Image (cartoon, rainbow, N blue to C red; front, top):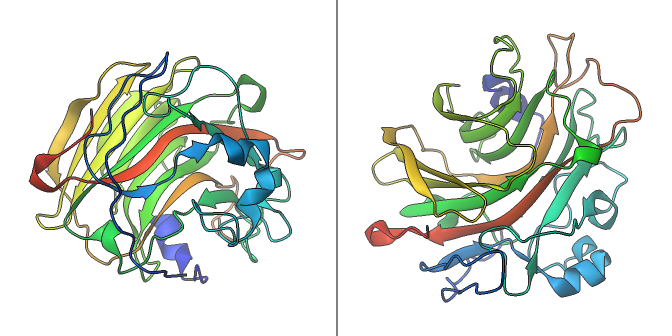
Length: 298
């Protein structure tokens, strides 16, 4: 998987396992986050405390029951060395025994032979190209927060969350920040949600102190996208859509960082990155829910 044909997908924007059984809804009721997950969870990417106590749980199939331990990361790196676990208030959907995690990249974050990229992308363990994540109506939830000690250099283009088509030819949906290659730098400090053709569906300024909460409903039946947003512990509100978007082609989700280079027309294989790279993106409240009958956890 993730053959070099991924190139087309990444230029355009910016282990299949058994299908999971939806889990029961979960209620969070600890200080700092009071949101309720009211829809069946299809993929749960929230991190329990025992993984924080022993990060090596992320490194093998025997112990990692959340994410794929093999993809997508530097060839000689283990997830236990990539992921950090910041303290502080939980994100909106993480209270009740779950912790945020920070995906980091370094000079060694080179996947396969893609020397132009620095990347580390989490995949839900049971996500599959033809699995339940790309059927019916699903809503992807994630919250992001910035680490002042590992801030992103926004003169580069960053792909942070995306759903990649099964043939690696495109990303049906992509959540990005930084200066997009070939675009104006005027919105480099914004998070941007784009469709597979690079069309902007929503944009909002990055907040360097608060949690920013996003939910993206993917209606595969109608080829529509709807976006929800809030900050801190505020309830999510619809901010864009439903908007027509081509969601065909199956595929899988990735959540993390893909940093593109500057100064190259062959961004997969070459280009400029600063040395001693140490950047990170904090994530919380990661899960995919079943949004049949218009169910969305707000």
